[in-house]
Amino acid sequence: EVQLLESGGGLVQPGGSLRLSCAASGFTFSSYAMSWVRQAPGKGLEWVSAISASGAGSYYTDSVKGRFTISRANSKNMLYVQMNSLRGEDTAVYYCAKGMSGDVSNWFDPWGQGILVTVSS
Amino acid sequence: EIVLTQSPATLSLSPGERATLSCRASQSVRSYLAWYQQKPGQAPRLLIYDASNRATGTPARFSGSGSGTDFTLTISSLEPEDFAVYYCQQRSSWPFTFGPGTKVDIK
Image (cartoon, rainbow over the protein chains, first blue to last red):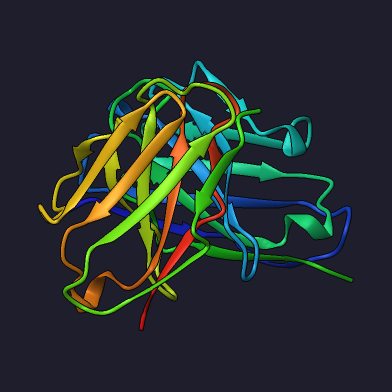
């Protein structure tokens, strides 16, 4: 069974940094693209970033470009996102999601349970 | 950026009724459209991908259709567990975008 477990969330001040992790199991992690998707409280879904299976290719939504960095450690079955210069509008539940293949352009299936990031002073 | 519009915002129906949800794209996304279901307090779940392909585990009462800019998710006969929010999403071009969602609630 595929399992995705996010960690590293919490309360951070505006301008601060946080690194989210996603531990993957139940599949050959190095063969699949991965993504981060977020959901602000009471709002809809917003795709944040995606990375190819090898890690060679990555994409970001415009609002996080230059502030967030997605990465992966295939030897550890781990996905990360380093979030810098955090703003109030980054407050959300962050989900990691598995792609359906190794291509960076992919659907999200399945998703982790999500981790809350709150940016507030 | 491709904008996805979903209608209606809320659909109030009874169990056993047919649900028809719409997703319209601001420009063609070919068949690169998916549908997700989200229940309160849960992560979203992929239902339909590439406009009409059911994901593993998606019941046959769910079907997707459309291409280009107009897409439909149909639930042929609503079960109690189908009352949820449904999002469409495109991956035709970066950035990937989601629609605002359609809430299917019990009438």
